[in-house]
Amino acid sequence: MPVLEGKELRIVGFLCNWCSYGGADSAGVARAAQPTDLRIIRVPCSGRVDPLFIVKALLNGADGVLVSGCHPRDCHYSAGNYYARRRLEVLKQFLPVLGIDDRRFEYTWVSASEAQRWQHVITTFTGRVHALGPAPRFGDSRPLLKVADMALSALRPLGTGKAAALDELKKAIKARLPELECVIGWQQGYDGAHTVPLFAKTPEDVDKLVWGPFNVNNPAVYLPSFKGKKVGIMVKGCDGRSVVEQLQENLINREDVVIFAMPCEGTLDMARVSEKLGRYTSIDAVSCDEAAVTVTADGKEHRFCMADFAQGKCYGCTAPLAATADASVGGPVSVNPGPYTPPELALLDSLSLPERMQFWSGQMERCLRCYACRNACPMCVCRDFCVSDSRDPHWMNQKDDEREKLFFQTIHALHLAGRCTGCGECQRACPVGIPILALRQQISRAVGQLFDGYKAGFDPAATPPLLTYAPEEKNIHERDWK
Ligand code: FES
Image (cartoon, rainbow, N blue to C red):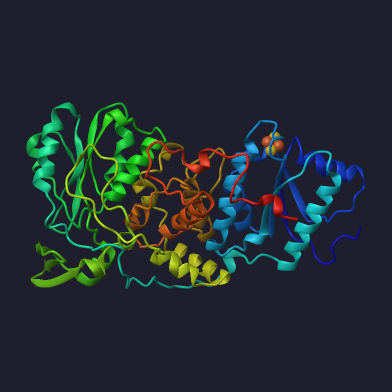
């Protein structure tokens, strides 16, 4: 069989030691002609292939990546390939958001006795990659700066929470306070337009709690550090989902957490607020009516209507009141179930693959590598062992390099696959306003499409889809690949 003509491309193959590596070996022993573009990395099982291996290869110059393992039911570790199938399928649906053609990545199953199948797989995949040509290099992309259209209509009314029954909630908190180490919530910060976390231990502290559009932080980020101690937490709808996800993953114990909830009417996008305020010396006063906040800075009044200045995530929120709560004040809110595409994701959807790569190149140029996105994420719980800091294995260098920065963002997004509740803290905490939430949103969309509309943070008893598997997947058809 003729080897593909023309210049060789770089294809990386991750082959399971027990089946596909044997299959490739058998093809070689049988002298089956194969293209020579493949560089094989032998792994103990397809379940060992972390999606970040694939992204690293593709961002660093591979023109294609192939993963091949034992057929379902034949894995030598019983279920490695079942887990791999879910992870790899989510990755396949994620790659286009980075501007990488998903046809450059494939995964399949080849057993040790299937020399002919291996020959077919590698010839077909190499042919596909040759048809696509050399992969565009991330470093060659000219930055493209585009911003999402924030003229949005919300799925439910947005407001300032002026009429929220905060006193009633404080009463409920005070009643439970003696049994708690503290209650995590918000208090006013250095001026009326900023809040900071409050760890209330006394009734006087509870009186300092505030509620409204400036409660932007997600207090759930602190909960895992209190594991084993009984604490209370005051939550908006999105914070409540983070708590539920932490319960799902046993990061906290249900009996140790008392959840106090009120319906959220939206939070302000402080980046857009700051932009409108411009340079100012001090905030003199902040007042609210039902629909808007008025901020007086250096004697000048600025009115921020919630419908125009809310965070992007708030427009698409369909659960403003935490469903899992021990004390809940305020009734359920009626919402329009959608459909809804978040603004950052809608922007990326409108771009071509090369434009998406250019978009991320432009965004990553601005990244400071401060890791505020990671530190603000309530689901990013392995900070002490983060791959970005690890020297063994040394996954990332510390250069101010756009590709490395995008690689870190990709790792963070992939680690949140099926776990991200969309609280948007990563993006809010970013000091330079990079729309990194879009990466998590694309993964959440893929997870929803593959796993029956699954959304993270709604059911404390549910197992996140990437932490489990099904022997037959309803929406994954990897065996259809020829
Ligand atoms: Fe081959 Fe698990 S041992 S896929």
